[in-house]
Length: 167
Image 1 (tube, rainbow, N blue to C red):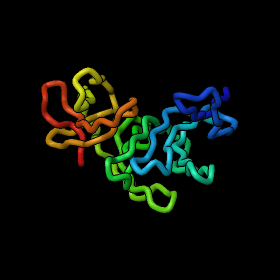
Image 2: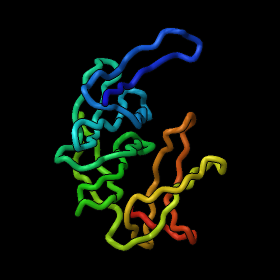
Image 3: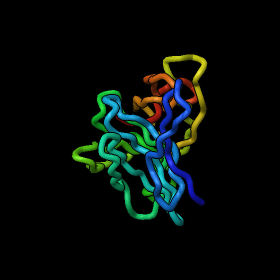
Image 4: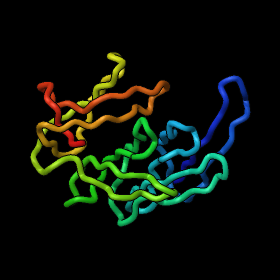
């Protein structure tokens, strides 16, 4: 399975290939300052997070260990990435980690081992979508950015309206 990330200006017929790894690169999210793209790359049995420096074209692997790491999203300040990972007990959980000098530092699991259905709510009412990141914790919230055309900040909320992921 092979796939790569590409960039194309809307008014152009020319596309530029950004990645060419042997696996399948997908779920890209641009950093707020436009310098980096965080994305998931499926290679073998694992899906790891990678960081692309848009200017130099250099890539760095952010996660290791063979877990499934998906849905990376930059924080609004560009200092952290929120993502879903099976790294803890092989269950899907939400994590947040600092990104510093091309490395993921101090990952923190935001969800616990109690089941709850969470939904992602963005500031644009037409872009609300349900997710099941794993197991949620009451009394906590987490902000994220959507990977859609415009940047929206949102929260994760329990189906009943109370917060469910930590921060």
